[in-house]
Length: 72
Image (cartoon, rainbow, N blue to C red; front, side, top):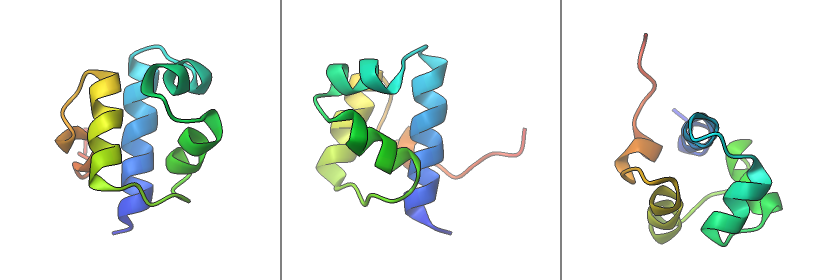
């Protein structure tokens, strides 16, 4: 399992669930829109601290960003 892709999918899903564009989320989180885009595409490798800060900006647990996909 590619953790970068998993984190990217979860980040995008949670961001969209909150109704945020990448630009809005970038402003809220303090990261650039380009960085957010790279994360969502699975091209960036975030640190544990970055995962925590992203989760905090989304109002979710950091665990939600690394949780494996569920079959719904």
